[in-house]
Length: 191
Length: 207
Image (cartoon, rainbow over all chains, first blue to last red; front, side, top):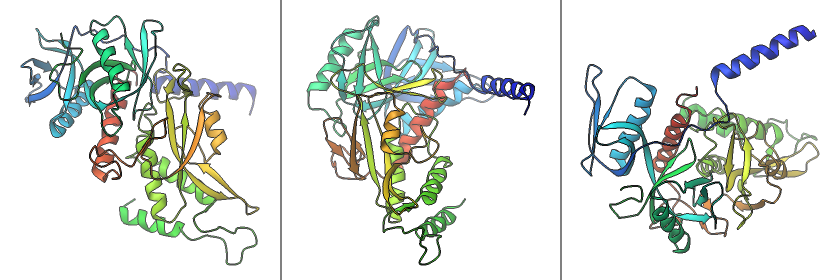
């Protein structure tokens, strides 16, 4: 293979990589909210003709979701799983206008370990079960309460099989978006 | 491939392809030849229901599924756990990957199944089956090296812990009322489904 043909193969390979995936090393912006609601699904209605679907949560907030996008199919799957398993969802968006930014699954978890101090405006947290590191941003209004819950979980004897928290994790930023005690109605992210 | 075909293949794999009395390959009970180990690796890697493309989570569920299937055909399967150093949280395991938009993932621990593999000289070595970060069976030391944390701690166990924390507490499944009950097929699939959703969310706007 000549140098020129190797160069062509390299360029073509690089083109294919950039065309199929965007590993840009830059995480997306943190969720904007401004509202973060963690609650169970009261009702979920998809409508024909491209009309917005409506998600109503147990706290009586009502959210509209535009169909026909990749985001919609992901959110629809998350909502269906939450209904089936009777789990809470985390909805980020503007609850006054019913605009959804994102919908996240929640998980029942116990804290394995939490950093003793913040670094770059965030605490590092390991949960029992998920291998990835997650972060609690200290600029979130609920961070103090969430930090207290996470620390209590780490020292409470809660475990993989006996979790004491309901947690919403944003996989895109590895951010802990909401925390509440298992069995409580109110999440640390809920104003 | 249908589940019937998969079972047939699993049964075939129990028998060495070497001729009887082969002077080259002698495979003790519960061990695999290098070729068989690679075949298992490739079979797992191509299983569509296993979300290999979400390295952020799911290693314990993937390891459980692989270990269960290997055990079912008589392989002496175990697991190897790699823990980031503790309590110095911050010295995480870190793996470069094309399966996260950031180009890497950070872990507090990682787990994968191990199998005994007989080399051409008849010696047996434990090899790690982990298609989430490798392209072929590798030794535990190679597997640890891929995770970029020299201070991490490798722990080998049998196949039974579904999850094992860094303090050594082991759980056979996800049942809060019975730590010894392995997860059901439905529980395993629900966890795979959750991780597929997280993977899709992770790549929205990036693919």
